[in-house]
Length: 230
Length: 89
Image 1 (tube, each protein chain N blue to C red):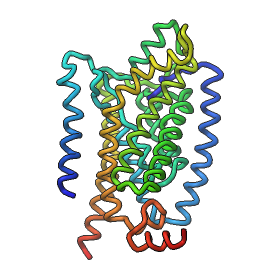
Image 2 (image 1 turned 135 degrees about the vertical axis):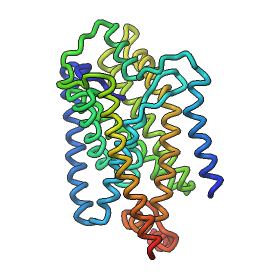
Image 3 (image 1 turned 90 degrees about the vertical axis):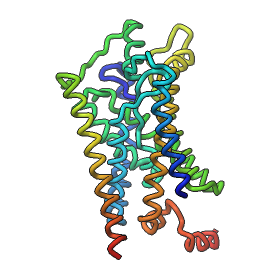
Image 4 (image 1 turned 180 degrees about the horizontal axis):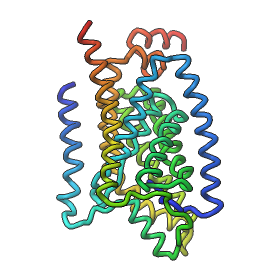
């Protein structure tokens, strides 16, 4: 999903930078609020950042015969909310832009928007919906994380199609970029969803109390209380 | 519960072997660069280039491995720490 350095002309790169900075700034605010209110959540925050680091470094083969990488930002969104996931994603993207010439500084705004904002927002909304529908936790995590991953690439395709429409227009270009990005991404998104189940199950087992304080999951006892309140 | 994990692991392994079975002769280059090519073929010239680029493919993969290992160390530390804490009780 990395739009390479210099591939977004004026005014697009500025637009994406501005949009992303607003969200990231809000994310930094949320971050400071969470860490002061719940200092015990800090290791969890590091864990989510680490998950993004690992996953976004892995270029994996896909059935289309090309390679792409998962994002890791969906799980952070489920646990800490999309705004904090934006901050964590931007850090990983900055690392890659500076040290790997992967993505870029001018396109950092646009890349943060797809991987750090749209992906996490989609993941978060799906997670909340699945919980309301009382689906099993693992199903919710899987759907949220894999669709968040996939929508990151759909967003990149749309961002590029806006700048580089074909003669047939935006939609034609969108399908063309989508064919490369989104299709390649489907198996990787499934893989990321599965990995997220493993990590989330571990967290539910060992950090259940903390997750319930953060209102990510509700423990059996508090589930009754919450139902009583509603 | 255990069967769930076994099924998931098998699916994951299958996902990453499948590409080589389905398209063994593909070149497996990055989707990012495929898109880059598509755009430059339209005649677009990137107006800005990376301020620093890894001097070789080896250095690039070193830095990718570094990024993954930083993440993996933190995840491993966290998991081990929590398991150890629980075991001590």
